[in-house]
Length: 84
Image (tube, rainbow, N blue to C red; front, side, top):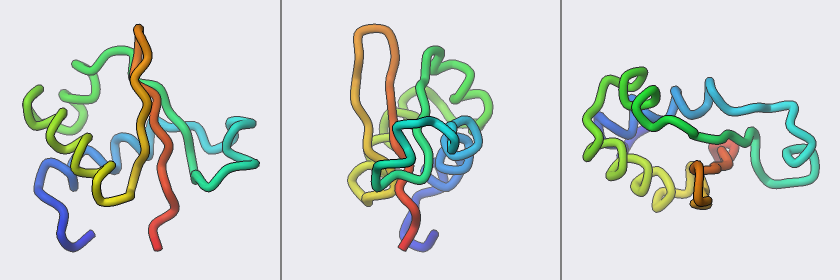
């Protein structure tokens, strides 16, 4: 995980642990797992980062092609890529 910020290193495993690997959408996709974030506060607590750092790390992981995310009205949905 070279090249990741401290916050990205904290958030990435949390996203991976909370995502579903047996989701039917995963089987026919390029993702290792897919997850939904309904309460950002929980992810902030689990990763031990601030709200501002959460958004920055979330976008950073997307930019570094470790996750892809979609925003819905009620939650954030993300896919975890298998690291190359």
